[in-house]
Length: 635
Image 1 (cartoon, rainbow, N blue to C red):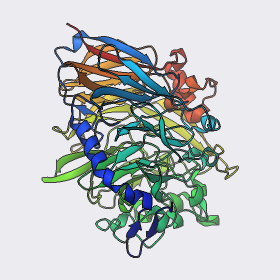
Image 2 (cartoon, helix red, strand yellow):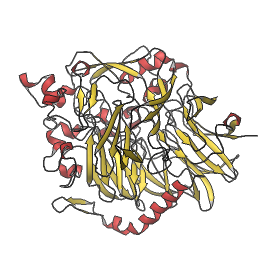
Image 3 (cartoon, one colour):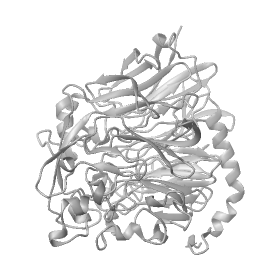
Image 4 (cartoon, rainbow, N blue to C red):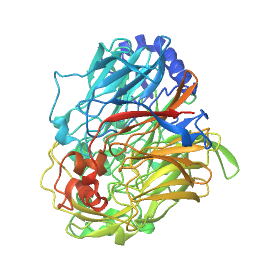
């Protein structure tokens, strides 16, 4: 089968023969997923819906009944470390089914929920052959997995070592297997992928191992590649067209190969920009949205093409708005990308942190809401970025509408809404090798990949888990350019911005930039958030506290200590008249890596600064685990 190819002169993308054969099934797969997402008794997609709102319309568990919420059942995942993500709950052949995948080695389970208090495992799948164990030490920030997908009678999931696999949802038998990511090139897949329009969209991680980011769409029926678009390289490689950014040409346009020339020499070939986290999708626009990661290593002077006396902070960093030329932006890292789902062609692309020096990966979830800004209704996209700014853009054309700080930010004074560029502060910009620079937020960001939530009927207010850490960053000499080998070259030490406060849950207005309330926590809030029509917000912390909060007041109404730290995302479903809420427990992720990898807690630079964080809050006292726990109200 021939792979898809691009003819940009005519802006036509030729789909593969297999993809064309699969077009008949696309409408069915989309309709089925949309129906599952609209059915509030189910949890049909990783984010609850294509828009990643993580909102449930169920209200049996509410501010009045939550005090009677008790554990209904637990299920082991079969693994210990790194339990990010969440299950899906769908109607498969007339039965309510839950499917989930563990952290490495990525065990899939199918649970029949017909007896909702006593689920029955009907099959499990654990691929034990043709695995690449080198993926484990190459997983930058733990061996996590952020979830699987269900569509057209298939369970589609990914493995850390780069396999994309479709299983028969009834039997667990393999339908197809595709090799998607390659650990020897620094690529590992923590996901999740996304299914839309009969296609499976997948990225991978590996920016800290000199990977070159790309997104690939595969045919849901066959697993064959339909299109592939890189994050760095020529316009053709990145899938830009003459129409890209037509309403915002200052973001960068076709005909300049910005994904090459904004890097010196061939640095773009190992320039990062991996799409390693969440995808969202607008079915009406048929656009898929994703974010890209950092541009490889953390010693930024090597990513600037000035030489000799010209190699200065001012020339390379462009922190001064008067010389903010963007010659060395390292496109298209740190970028929100809007691509046509069928072809991959770039509709628009907005780079949040040009010439990154802080590892402010731009992969956090892009949440889609309809929002009024300055008196005009917009199909909006909201992104709470690692760099500490909450962005609101028009998701049709990329217009930048708002960019508010949602945590303490000192690396930039603001984002210019006209140019779209941050106004950087030299004193907080690491550049010279061997010079230690303090900056807020830390490299783990104002928040990391842990997803927030919003009620679509109240679209200005978002419920966000935040990190409240700063850092000292000292770029180092580069010793190699080998893909698949650790590729950071910086000493990073992270510390609490305010002693005793590591994280907060925050209710934040993305139009006004105002905070309604916040709940400080001595542990990191590394779980996602669920909001419900019952007036509640659910979330967890790395000590293992699972909480329900009154959305209006911010008062904690219910708290349950689970057996390990929580980095998973809560979901809700309803069967036989009973509403449930459930979540994974099992410490891990970047912040929990010192525990799961048994690192030396005396090394303050270990795990790129995470050991210092772990030591500060005592994460060495939190046991590992791997459980999914379900709760319901008991009279």
